[in-house]
Length: 295
Image 1: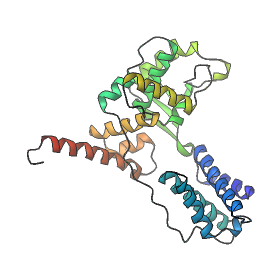
Image 2: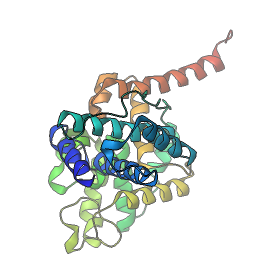
Image 3: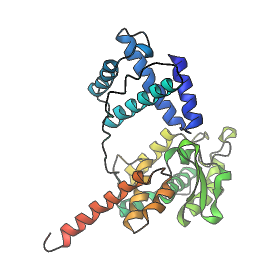
Image 4: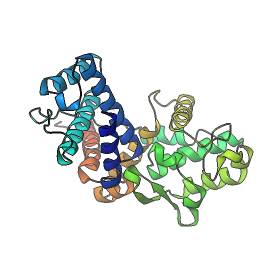
């Protein structure tokens, strides 16, 4: 079974450009399904039935998996079985009779503009960590980067004189992001006065490094943002992705064209970006209710 999974993931990476996080998640999903089959005494993927798939998804729900996680697990199974059928490795698709689980459409949680400003401007010192954290927050909010995009940012990717940087997004797709003056200034200060105090031989040319000089990880980045959020009075649930949501929400709220926002975020489909118009519609409804005499 492991050979089929490996072949599927290799095809996913080469023909569809799936990113590392998607591949890791699909590998976990397929491994969990294989373990579920073994527990039910099923010999392998070829012997799997629709009932086996339904039982696996049901157990995921009983365990407390989020609806979005269950939907992704089903998507992994459906893509896997379709691939194996196409390649002649299996003769049936047990997922075919089942409907795609509904993925909840939740509005992204963005910070209010004053709260975002307090958070981004909260690291005020000249110590290396303060300069790093200020640059990180400015770049996350100024460019709308994903956590993985910021962690992977290298010195050669910066185009600070032009106010932008090159990032590697989902599916290894490159795009140019606009950072803005505040972010570029913060990055310059970090590189000149902060980064030399933290870099080590293992730092390479990564723009941001942790306290011990290693390239920044998503977990370390999340910890930095959460700590600064707590100190600035922002919500305790604030994450790097919160700043990405805030970036998009504030752009749309201030009149930015939705297709321009799509390009800045690196969304493959306009449908993904469209949710920010719903966020703005909610803000407008609140304003209407508060100020209109007939609301």
